[in-house]
Length: 468
Image (cartoon, rainbow, N blue to C red; front, side):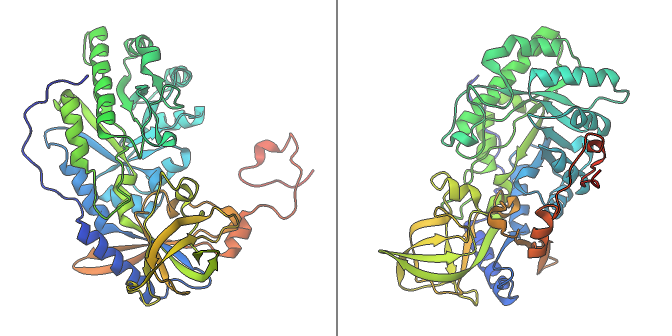
C-alpha cells in the first residue's frame, strides 16, 4: 500500500525521442516514400517504422530503472508481430512477452532465449503449457483451473522448472477505456485479489516452484497512480506469502505494461521515467533489490515510431462536408475506426512529391476504402486543402495498427518498411512485403469443399484431406 516517499534518486538522462526529431523523421519518411514511388495503384497504402525512434524509446525505458536493480524489460509481441523488428529489440537486450503459440514462435524465430520470454494467456492449452515447460519459457498462470493443469504437467516434467507465476487481478477498477482495463472486478484476466487472497497465498505455500507474481492493470487510459497502487498491492501480497512460507519465495514481480501513449502531439509523454517514478513513490520495496522486476511494454515502445501513409483517391462533396477518400481505413486502423473517441488519430497532408501541404484549409471527413459508412479515420477535421493524389500521413501508428491488419473486404495487408540511421547514413528496408490479390485469394480457402470424415480429422495438419 502507499507509504511515505523515499528520498529521490539522482535524475537520469532523458533518452526520449524529442518532439522535433519525431516530426522531422516523419517528414523524411514521407519524402522517401514519395521519392521511391511506393504508393501505387497496386499498393496505395503502406507503413514505415523508424528504428531510430524505437532505439531511443528502448533506451529511455532502460534508463528509467536504477542499475542496481535486476530488470527484464520485454517487448509485447502483440503490439508489433514482425520478426525483423522483434529481432531488433532482441539485439538491444530486451526480452519478449507473448500471448499465444504464434507469438511464441515469432519470439523464438527472432532469437529470444526461452528464459527471456514471458508467456501470458488466459487460455493456454495442455500443449501450450507442456511446450513452455519443455523450452524453459517463463509463464504466468491465469486462473485456478490452469494451476491444476500445471500441477499435473509438472508432475510429469523431468527437466528444470522455469520461472512460473500467478497473474493477479487487483480488482481496482477501470481506467478511461473500459475495453483496455484489466483490473475490473469482473475482468477476464487473472485471479481476483479481493476474491481469493487467502487461496493465492495457500497456492504458493503448497508449491515451492511458484516464484513470481504478475499484475497488469490495463493498457491505454490507465493512470500512472492507478498502475502504481496495483503494483504496491502485489508487493504487499509477496510480503504475505513470505510471512506464510517463512522465507522469500517470490523472487520476481512482473509489473506488466500499459503506459499510455500521447496521440495528441509528437511529445512522448508520459515517459518511462514517469512510470518508474510512480512505482518508486508508491511501491518502494519493488526497488529494494529483493525482487527481479519484469516489464511488458508494447504500444509505448512502438507507437511513436510508426507512420501510416496512404494515397488520396478522390475528394468529393457530401452536403456541407468535403470528403477525402483514401486507402487508410479500418483494415489498418481498426481501433480508431470503431472507437474514435478512445483512439483519435492525427492526420497530416502532403503533396504527391512528399512536401507538406500549406495554405488554405477546409473541414474534411477522411474516409477509408472499406464498404461501410463508419470507415472514417477523421471526422470534421480542419486540414489543408486536399487534392487527389496527395499523401495522407497518420502518426503514432507503430503499434497495433497495420501490424494487426483486419482483412475486411479482402483488402490486402499493406507493406511495412523500416527507416534507420546506420553508420551515419539513412537506410530504408522492407520489413514485411504487402499481400498481392493472388495472396488474398489463396488465403480465402479451398475452391472445392471436401467432406471431412471422422477417420480423417486427425490427419488434417493444415490441409483438407481427399474425400472418402
